[in-house]
Length: 464
Image (cartoon, rainbow, N blue to C red; front, side, top):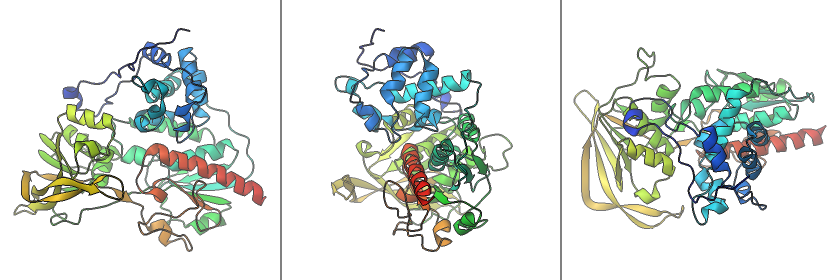
């Protein structure tokens, strides 16, 4: 096999920006077979595997890429599946540029290998060509409950099921997937792909019960009474934060959570939807993360003529993935950086008509290491908009911790654990993902779920 020594990765085929900005079809089209083989042959198959050490779920990256290079796609999938329960998801939404690809040796004198694009290709190839379900693991006679069918809960459930545990996942919404179905738009992550990944877990024997709000329908203590020997809390961080500025109660103000949930989970973009959402002309989105990009790009697809990202720091400080920022700019999203909303203005009908913003400048670094934005005295401007979307973060819902005696949380409402294993202040109760860290990435939540699954297995085996 001849290595591909090109310094540039194979470009990802994408929809034309002026076409995709008005549809919800997937933006990135994926590699062809030949593209994937060619890109895989750029990998040097390093002995030290620096990319693997930077992967939160420790996929053996050089090994799976070597299989692709040798055109053994199913073998590549099986290597990924040893570490990841959601490869088709991670290949699309994981920030590889900050993790595995940032450590790629090929990136020293050129562009890193397209690890995420190859993971996506392998997962998609497997889904399209493999008709056999995985073998049902031999049961070990022990039961574990998992709260939340998002990335963290699904990762924990998958690993524990492979070890032989009888797993029941309790999901508050009517559909499993968590943020994968209510938060990330169809154009970044098609929901049929999420459902297929969930179906794979069900084939391992995982039961998923929806419309089960733990803390209301059942408590954690009742889950133990039902014969579960451990409980994993992967309930995420779905409680939106607001800016506490005048006008946030006006009609036309949404949290990004509500806006995206209506569109993604309730399909509000479809004609005749039972959960309609306003079709805005001019939209401002406060925030600079991936959720802000998702909300802004969704608003454009809902027919808005102008969409603004209003962010209090500069372009260099945007926390969103570079790819998402580039896609947003290509689609015509207008970036108003070094600006901070201070008042949402309403008309005589109590509906949003404008947002007043302070101009900002960057001062000294704050605790996060980023330069702190400070107000430019006397510098304000007003944007005429009919919709305002707040995308400045989320925190965990307090329901579970308020109904679980002895479950410790910090001042931000996040569940306190002992670290990597996820053990909480309650015996046999583990937690991970956004419920512990606050809003973070899908892959970090999955890593926490995997670590907790290992800790739960050790706990139950030592107890028995």
